[in-house]
Image (tube, rainbow, N blue to C red; front, side, top):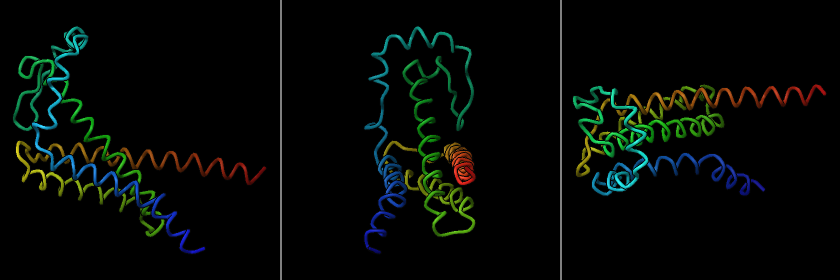
Length: 171
């Protein structure tokens, strides 16, 4: 009976964290040329009409200008997709790390935020060994913000779940 419980714990709690960390590691080990989605984006003609409303957007990111003028519509769109991916994957990593850490630590929120932050730093270092990839502090910041949002999301969902459980117990 204990063995079945251990397997369920691994599948339910450990596997999501391992899979998400693996996806991040794999992505960082993949050269940019194999991840470049600009050719596919360039065929999405509706984007060109939609992006004309964003021609006023321009800012510097890691010393480079980000604008439609400097990157073109495909590059500009890809930039936001890539940064949203950073944010989202670390949101998920923190969410599931907190869920896992809750089984082992009293300060599971701290573990759930620190692990993704440390993993993000290691990931950017790892990325420095991959062709066409550049490690950026700015990406670590985006990753950490995603992790904090993931922690907040976990907190809100857990709080709501606990309130429902308490309500059911009282009734």
